[in-house]
Length: 202
Image 1 (cartoon, rainbow, N blue to C red):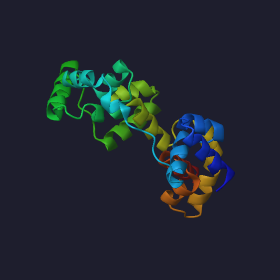
Image 2: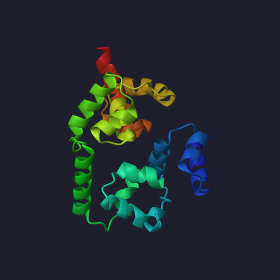
Image 3: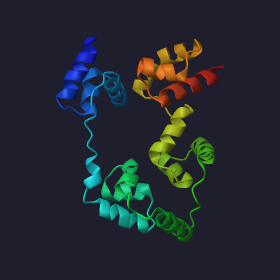
Image 4: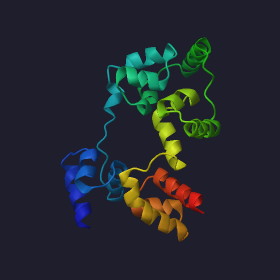
């Protein structure tokens, strides 16, 4: 076991957050989880959001036709946890309420993922901001940023600049994307962005 792995195990067992561990080791939060899985460390997440008293309000807001992002912003919770928080809700009723609300607001129904991705790139090229694009394509800001990042349209982060060289070298050597992710402990979007930059350069 390397010194870094030993330090990660120590911090993990002390109960430090993934962000704290990542800062201490100089690696991304997602890499912390990847290493923890590789080292066989037990997950510490008890999914406390499943017993959060705000879950009743999540269900009420969804049934009023609010989107996941609107509910998340209003209650200061993560959008990706909403489906689990509202597990007992009548989902067809939620979809009907959201469709009705979009019609009243004059907002078109969400496009499928490929259309939304293409439209997001088009809007970004025309100078729209990420929040504007998110509203236009009915996707979260995080999803829009991920799409733009995969196509190397957003400025690279300092972390990406540190890891881009090895990723590109492995891609040029014919290593599979999956193997690159596991070997370097990087995210799928990082590999996609590096591949997009290679295509743009040739």
